[in-house]
Amino acid sequence: MTVVERREVALVDLLDRLLAGGVVITGDITLRIADVDLVRIDLNALISSVNENVPSPFQELL
Image (cartoon, rainbow, N blue to C red; front, side, top):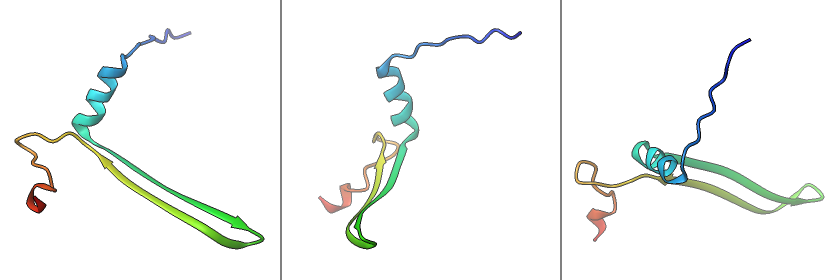
């Protein structure tokens, strides 16, 4: 029998770890009635922190 250690992570620590490495969220939603596509939503999102070493990609647009 092995002992599994339970680790509790604060929400702030979890967000800090995710933003340090970045998170990519993708998804597709299709509303269909009688095999006819009525609405389609595609989601592509990148969530990441920005600092001096990694500048914002939107800085060029300003």
